[in-house]
Image (cartoon, rainbow, N blue to C red):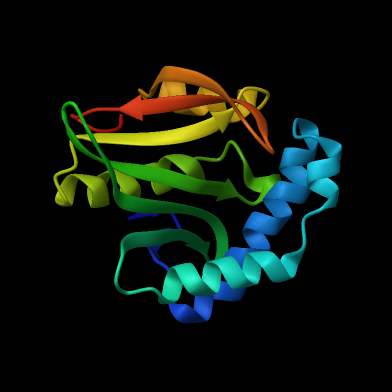
Amino acid sequence: MSNSNITVTPAVESDIEAVATLQFRSHTISFAEFARPEWVATRQIGEYLEKWAEYIRDEEKDQTVFVARENGIIIGMVSVDGPTGEGEFGTYAHLNGMHVEPDRRGGGIGRLLMAAAADHIKSRDYQHTMLGCLESNTYARKFYEKSGWRAVRFSNEEPYGWTYIYQYDPPYFV
């Protein structure tokens, strides 16, 4: 997938540091606008490096990280896990870790990542896709709702706080 000189591909082992750094930057810069300050202050790059090394290297689970690159530099990411559950209407995937470089938000990178995730989910024939989004993250909530997601549950999930749980059903994302 591409948009001018932006390409979206699955992450590989050599992307671990860039993926971890992107999520760390997103959590400490973008999330600082709406997340609890004490949560933001506890972020440590080492934890992100560990998490993404394990995630990207694990070949036993159906999980993929998609990265958006511009001129070879990772500027966005999203991960897809599945199947993460079995509901009344079939299996569902979990979309998580959607992050775009803080100074690049609003430029269509999220849409490219969402399209890659949708193609991946569709190829595995999941009946539903779920994601969580903090209530206070109105920027992301607008993005998801504009993309066709609908809130199906609202819960207090610590340590983050109030969270909307979104669901998307076929025909997949717009």
